[in-house]
Length: 298
Image (cartoon, rainbow, N blue to C red):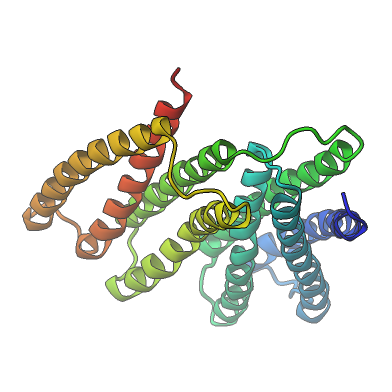
């Protein structure tokens, strides 16, 4: 590993330990504010102090997510090595980094709604769920960075294989497809207004698709960088062709069902918004899942 990559890894690890402390401190602050705000206690929250500390912690977390993802991607491309752990770390690092913007919006909304005398329990639940994602991302990124540094002391005998990135891309596809399905189904059961649902569906769908697009781009870029013929080997071609055909059939059947539901009186108000992203994420999950299953068969 070059000095540049080592420096990136050590810098990311240092930020990671700071980010861990920052996340814990923010959770302590939120646990103090939560009962005061949701129960409208007489004791008024110290907004200025808590806000400054929370903002600094959020900046530290954002810097770590950005630095760690750049470091892991650089190691993957330069050293030509990857693993499922690294791919998961990159995927959840990107999701966590994007969700930080949502955290800022949530905290702003909580403050405004509290001053208006409105209940904010729903926003708090989303905020705590988001920090669960941050914690998971922190763990994956720290383990991946440490693993890369440990492997640097071992003989570098293996180079990244196209099969590894092929599997990593479809693993990411399954994760993003399932996350998208969960999000869309949760939206269909929510009581959000139609205009709010339209905006949330577009934004969250793009957020969930970003990690898959990133890993797909890495795979394509890797083939270019390594000057490998873009043609797939016979097994990969057969796997993709079979998975594509079965995904097409499943997508057509799902499309018929979704169209029937749209005309049905049982359809909820937001169904005309939700059916399309549901079709996309279902197709992505099926295609990637079948590709993974086929590639692992002997």
